[in-house]
Image (cartoon, rainbow over all chains, first blue to last red):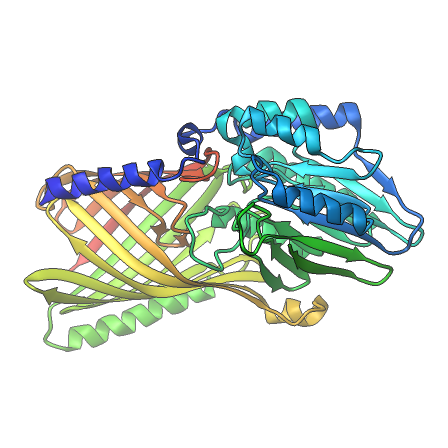
Length: 281
Length: 244
């Protein structure tokens, strides 16, 4: 009986770890680098490059957000970029799992990333971007995975924070950085939006992993205390909206090719409100 | 502190009720201290827990509370749980079925409430638990009325899974034992099923009614499908005292 139990546990473990070719087994057991190392590198980058500031002459503006394109193939990504340019979005945010983590897919993304002169694009890493030692590729091409950018319109300025949750935790250093940013800067801005890849709540049953509850407690407290308006995530591939107090937690549909519900998020910011629309391709 | 006194009074009343009946009853107290470090909280953290349980024949009621003494802004209410267990025999196998409620006020305006059912089954060297629970994150009425603009106070998670698999080196009749667990549950914590926690435990019965135990818990973030990172660990030491 007990031998059968041990064999069953081993078989189940094998099935879990070998069930998906997109998963890098090495990463699923131990990451190539710790989140704190990625954070340190991101801060070095930010010190050199500074935090981006966008200035617009319009009172109202749009930002378009996508996640989970998993490049390789780029059919839906191309449609998204076409929409971005047509709808005259002020900036675009690619919120993790943009690639599969493989070097060739980073090459593809580098080639088709919108030109900075056309539109500003901001990238965060997701778990897939880190597979196959993907962080080295990401950092070499796009730089920091933890940073903030601001948008100044004639009436007010807004704060947008990008976080690295590709390892299922922000890590101690990133948590402290986030707290400092919210403590010192939140009051200066009208709206505050946080982008990170991993969704916070298990609103449906999937095998995808979330942040541990102890970390969620700390983050939810911070978002409540500093009146963060919106948290935008991906990872779960199906959209959901949760509201707790003044904070809205959004999860986006995946932009993945072949996904019947493939889509992205359109943020509308005007003098009074911060609104959103889910757009399906 | 007031709540702790109330809990003890309730337990004493239950004890008297049990003792007044001619049933097989047992009273148990468990105390422990956790010292550890997580990515997300001020380190190190210290948690103190006390639990009492009564068994009357096949019924067991447990109540426990836990204080996070390292919290910077210490909140006045501790984590609390209440657990009701009914012991069944199904096909000559003993199965415990538990119903529980867990209250975690993690910050003054926000709290977590979990409730669910759990079945436990033991072999000589294995222990299994499997169950389902609901989780609710909620904002307190005061905070909501004071400064909240929207109308939603809750976030729900439905029918999540709880599990525990423990392997013991010794059979239960031995005085000492060492076990290894894979689980997503603890007395005052239920993680998502995709976030397993590893636990190495040692226990020693000084006398049949008094046991000391020491446990090491390790949590990793992003198991199964993220780029896995360490999240934290803690050491638990405590004792269990049984009164027949």
